[in-house]
Picture 1 (cartoon, chains in turn brown, red):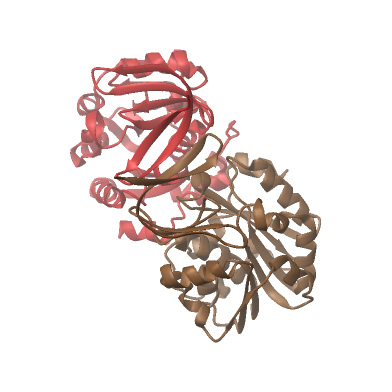
Picture 2 (cartoon, chains in turn green, cyan; picture 1 turned 90 degrees about the horizontal axis):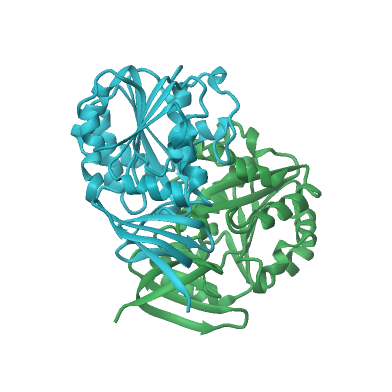
Length: 275
Length: 275
């Protein structure tokens, strides 16, 4: 018997992957959590039926959400990751020697536990002494933080279920307050092919709060359309004006100095969404 | 009853699209040809089970295969498209006022006929007086052409079936001969996630024939991995050194001046394939 997992990325389009085995299929307090082994992409974390990360292509998302804002900030010291219980963003954050503390606030402790077990090369650095892991509501954590972080990364699920409020304007206002006076934040903001209106909405909301707002993209094969967007809100530092000397050697598979710049060159139909 | 079309892009991964109706399902002299209407991507041309083009995302491939080499050449006058029977590349070629003649050589006349019928906004410009359509073997056409074209675009299917020989080194040697002394060619060369060895092979082959060889990418949701590559071989003009004044206004949905440059910034795992 062949087992195939299919994610309907829209009502009428999806991806399908051959499954070798199912490790976990569990309803947590917050969402349906599946951890499966696929033939093409290795182990895969699926939340509420949506692919979150896979062993084969995880590096794209994690590198691009982390390094673009971290290289934009002149000296990121205190970093917060909201969501991201698989630990991949934290792993990339720790590649920056200026970072003294990285806090992860993940609402669902089981995401962390199962990631440590089945995605150890992604979650392994959650044990690093610079990392503090809090199993808590990211929205509440932001609401109670003030003038604290240099860089905040919002590594959320889609704007349905537990993460819906992480796409509201009030959340971005909280982030602004939680950031220091030259702080930067980034959020994953889905794809321009199937959810263009989300990109427009978030960009407009962020633009009303942050003096510098930018959108960039990366190719992620297991995410809808393969073209993922990230929205940056920044108080002072412009990602389009990063100084060359900020770049230091890091071990990456997707990110390069050239990609850091090129990622902000948007296809015309994408830049049209921001007008 | 719901009908879904599934393309297995690898042995263990694919895309699946809800089908509203099937217009054509026919074995031609060269390949299986299906023309279907999908809910998400509109009308879709499928050859040997592989998505060739769709109404919703066709503009990416057609703009990027055409405009990048055409803006690299200082004055493209005589242009050849090998394959591309849907007419989308021709449509983009004709946006360049310097082009006096555009020849399309498509091996399968039924691709042209059904595209005119079901993809009229893609194939419509095949009727333009500057266009000559030849239903013929592109490999043979190249083999019998000499010092003739400014720009050649290879808009082939995958390297299985009728297009297999369009990925051989001998074909690129023929292209070099068919080009004028400052000619440029581009070929679609699949994706780096599932067929990395093809990219490496073609790049090496082209490098042995052309003094300037470059790879660039574009996001195409219905193509495997969403990240498509194009390989350029050029005798004199370097796509990385295009002069700003070459750019003129054209009506596009993906291509921009910035994209023309940014498309050559490769993710590290992709540039590693070219070493």
